[in-house]
Image 1 (tube, rainbow, N blue to C red):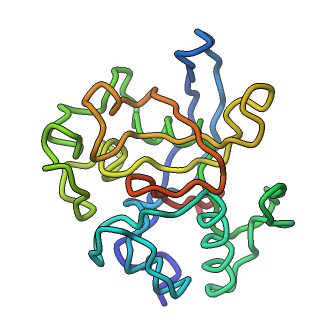
Image 2 (spheres, rainbow, N blue to C red):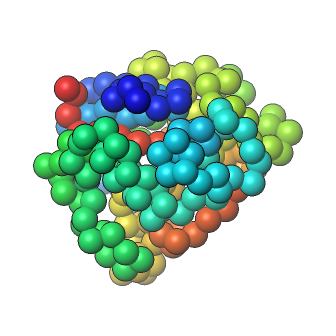
Length: 225
C-alpha cells in the first residue's frame, strides 16, 4: 500500500493561514490560526474504505464514489486502522461512543478540524465558494439526486476536489457542547442539498453515531512531511 494514497486519496499540502469561522444560528464569528497540514485530495472512496476496514456500508455502490453511511465514530476508527496499516501512530485513543481523545503529537491519519476544513476549502478565496457552483460541486440541482464519483468537478486552487457538494464531511470538532452535547460538525453540503447549502461557511451537526447516505469524510495528517 502506498503510504501517501489509498484509492484516489493523495494527500495535498495545505499552507498555514488564518480563517474566520461563523455560525448562522448564533450570529457568532471567530478567528482561528491554522498550522500547515495535509488533507486528502478527495473524500474517502468506497474502495479505499473497504481496503482498510473490509466493509462496504454505502447505499449507492461504486468503487470511486465517496463512502457514505458512515458515522463520525466510523471515520475515527478508519483513521486509526489506516494509520496502523501504514506503520503510523494512531491519532485517537479511548475510542468509544462517549469519549475519543486526540493525540495531537501522533503522525497518523485523522479528521480535519473545522477550521482546517474551511481554510482548505477556501484555498485563499473569500467568497461563499471557490468557483462557480456547477463547475465545482454536485448538488440537488445538477446531481440527478444521486452521489457521483469523486473528482468529477473542478478542484480548488490547492488541488482539493469535492470540498463542496457530493457528500457532507465529518470534522473533528464538537458543534456546541452546551446545547448539542457530543454532536460533531459537518461541512461542505451534499448531493441532495439545495445550492445555498453548498458554501464554505455552512456548518451542520449530528450525533457521532449518525449514518446517512449523503455524509462521508476525508482524512488529514498533521505537518507537511
